[in-house]
Each structure stands twice: as structure tokens, then as C-alpha cells.
Length: 559
Image (cartoon, rainbow, N blue to C red; front, side):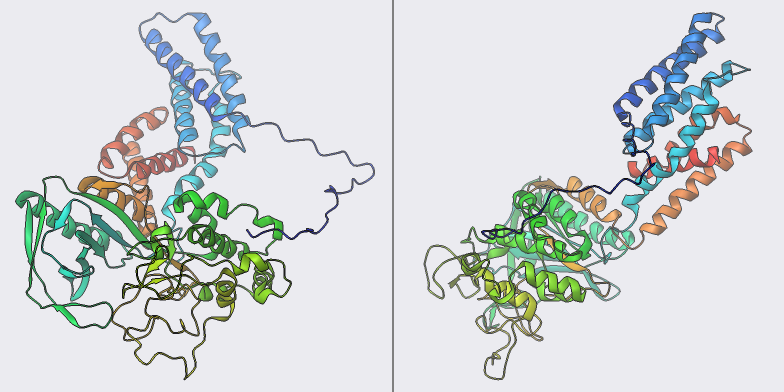
């Protein structure tokens, strides 16, 4: 993560555990059979079972075909037995379902199945449904510490043609039960939909219906004229720029697309996964080589995030949106609050790893490096980032930022800004680090008019940090249908009603099985008939829910 000390601690060769006299050395585990091999054998079994079934029905079966089928079922038993310990999931589950179907069909042909037929194989298959189900259920469990999500969809081809309309000007809002649920704002010359945080898929659907209806109207009419529901205010001093009811014209074509962003929480123990999934090109480097310092527990995860910021921000930026444009994953929780979530031992270890206050002199040159370097407080200089007043700023030194993660940036009566709303140069606050927000932006205070997104919030009640994911899947634009689909897909497994959705899937699987029994379907046909019934019952649901229902049905049949 940081420049390594000139002489890293010496480490002797790795030693394994001493062998107890008379004890045999542990044998290496047998290599698990690749899932692809199981797929191949499943396809062979399915093909031969279908062929054999047709020939038996037509009186054309040959003894050699029965022998071949016996041999293949023996191979399947071996394959599935070796699959224990292999990665499981949708691919293996589909293969196992095909094996089960083939063997069920074969069992209907042979009235006296002998060794190597479906019985032993199915017993092995049944032993795997547990891990298969566990992996397939995982996306239904809220992965985020605080299952509350908001989205932004910035439309790049819906243009504001009225001149001098400031960013963040509200054009329209939608409410439900007196609470605002969606905002349509100006972002430079673009439009941006912003949703309020929600905790259930029903709330999300209500928001998306607002977005869908508005975009449909824009596409149908080639644009719209909006009358401001409230005055547009200046970011710096809050004076009125445009009055309420001011007319703003928007022009668009018949195809509207834009970039999707999301905001949600992660616990400290989930940060590496978050960065690797959404953090862009700097993420892999951010989580590499930290083991050199042997950080303790969750201190390592916070170090990953700190390293990610350093890698991203030392490049500097000259953009009117400021430094956040360099961060595909941007923390809306301040780092000092994240540090306070660590245990006492983890905090001690974090301070050691960042050489807190330069106590050991290990990283002096590194700590002296300026994040987003440029001359400070001067107009029209190249480099740095623009504050809201049009000045360009450099960030703090890396060392000063590290120390502020531990200490905060305390205020005193002498340094506390007199105008809390607009001061961009004063201390960030007792509970903020020096990038929460960066210098030039108003410190996060109660009653301020404008606030910059970086480090705005503390941690959630469960210790989760809030993050803005600036490119949910890829940094590309999505049309209406794809954007809505992406929002639903991304939020579905993260919302608080995930458990309710899982219960509904379980209920569908139970109902299908009950229906099969009520219709007196032969047990050997449960898989085939049950699969068809599930597809009919869940034809409008997500594919993942269908796959989970299939796994649940198979488990119920086996059990």
C-alpha cells in the first residue's frame, strides 16, 4: 500500500505443523472433477435416456444400449461424487438437474435397476443440494450492511436549452404520502433523476413508475418546458439565481439514455469485494500488497479503501465536479467515522500501518505527497480541482489526511467558520477527515445550503459506511428499458424485503409440489412436470428466482 521500509522485517521459511510420531501424513485432497466434465456427462446421459426411452416405447431397444446406459450411470456416480467440494451454483445445478431427469427416465424403463443405476447417484446428488441452495440463495440475502438504496440516472441526450440554469436546480419532484420520492434536476446541461433511499422493492417500483412515465412523455413530445417549483439558489452564498415558476426548456429525441449510479451501504468487512466489483482500474492495485504490513482484521479493509483513494487522487483532476469524478466508488461516509468502527486493537494496527503522525519515519516522502497537487487558492491555474466558488485547490498531504482519519479535523472558537453555509477553507469538523469534504467545499454543518457528497454522513447504526457507486455496472449509458432493468436487478437482492421474496419463492415451490401430488403425477416425473409448472408460475419473475425455485423443488422431492 505504501513504499516499503528499506529493510522489511526478516521472516524465516514457512514451517508446517510438526508431525506426531506414528501419525500418517495427511494425504492431499483428490482433485474435484471440473463442472464442465459433469456437464458433458449430463448431456450424454440426457441424450441416451431420451433415445432409449423412445426406442423402448417403439420396441426398438437393444441390450447394448442398456449396458451403455448402465456404464454411463456409473460414470455419473463417479463424476458427482468427485464434484463434492467443487464450486457450486447455477451451472452445476443445471447439470445435476439434467442427470436427475435422465436417471428418472431410465428408472421408468428398467423395473429392476441393478448396481450402477440411479439410486446411488441420486443419493450423491441429494448431498449436494445443500451447498447448491446456499449459493443460489446468497443473492437473496442483503449483502449491504444497511439495506437502503437510492439511484441516479443522468440523461446525456436530454438537453437543457435555457441558458444559465445552475446544476442541482429542481425541475420537478414526485411525492408519496407527503414524502419526496423522486427529483428531476439539472446537471450542467443534462437532466438527472434522483431517487430517495428506499428499503423495499415496492417503494422502488413506485419510483421507477414515475421515471418511466416522465421519460415516455419526453420521448413522445421531443422535450418539455418545466416551471421551477422553487427558486434556484447560488451554491456559494445562497442568493436567488432564478425565481420560482421560471420556465426551463428541455429538448430530447425519441431515444433517451443515460448513466446509472447508486448509493448504498457496506460493512467494513465487505469493502474489498465492493472495490473489486465496482472500483474500476485502481481497485485491483488497491487491495494488493497490503499483507506486507499484516493488518489486523477489519483494519485491512479500511486500508484497502484508503489505498484506493490515494491511487485514484494522486493523479490530480481539473474538473468542475471536483475530485469525486476520479472515484468510481466514493465514500459518502467520512473516514474518521469508519475508523471509529474498528476495535481498539484494529485501531492500533491501522495507526501502525499508516505511520500515524510519522512516528516511525517509515513513509516520510510518501506522507508528504499532496493529493490532487496544484497551487492553492488561485484562479485559472492548471491542475487541481474546482471548488464551488471557481477557485482551484490542492488536496491535503497524504500524511495529513491519514492523521485526520484518526483524529478528525477539530474546530476551535477561533477556527470555526462564522458563515457555516459557505466557508470552504475552515476545519472540516471534529468528526471529519480532511477529504470529508475536500478543501474548497463548505464543511458539513447543520443548516448549510450546499454540501459536497464526499464524507457527508457518519456510519449507519450497524456500522455500515455509505458509498456512491458512480458506475453501477459499466461507465456507459443505458436506454430506459435497460436502465430500469439494471436498477431493479441491482437493488432486488439488497433491499430489506429480500427475505420476503425468498419466502415467496419457497411458497411457489411448495405449491407446485403439492399440485403434482394432487394430480397424481408419478414421482419419477416430478422433475419434468415440476419444472414445467414452475416456469409457468414464474414466467414473469427474474431468472434467478426460477433457478432457486427449481433447487427448492428438487430438495423437496428428494426429502
